[in-house]
Image (cartoon, rainbow, N blue to C red):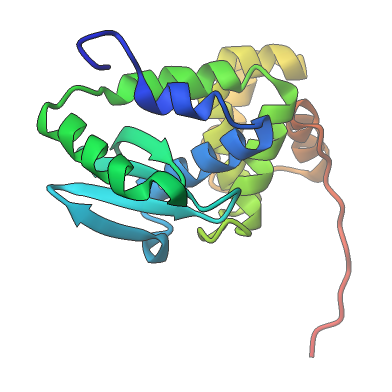
Length: 196
């Protein structure tokens, strides 16, 4: 947050369509987990740029902040790239932004069914240029962003049951996956394919 109370990344992101916001925030989460390195480049002064393959050359500017944390500084597109880089560097120099703001923002966005659907699809599709995650891993992240208590209410399960399923290292039954995918407007479809 800037001293004037403004949140440049959030203000920019909220001008984008829901599907674009979901894709971008999904990319940010996967980059924080170590993915998408081919879409990242340093732009100077400790600031990095993520090129997102969604929309008109969208870019996110961030600074690493510990293990699996990014300080999201700013977003923009190709047309404002040079000025965005300078602004992001200025924000980073002043350490004026906190990652907590981004976490709260994504948590709020996850209340929107369209947003959470697009977010999860983006996590597992990889068509935004960042390596996709396996479905259950992506679900764990998305549910964490929503909040386990809120998610448990949506799937009409006890919070402890949801937590137990999420802590398993094995993939749950198809029926459980379907139940977990319902709040995202998705369901499991199994295909049998021939292998050579």
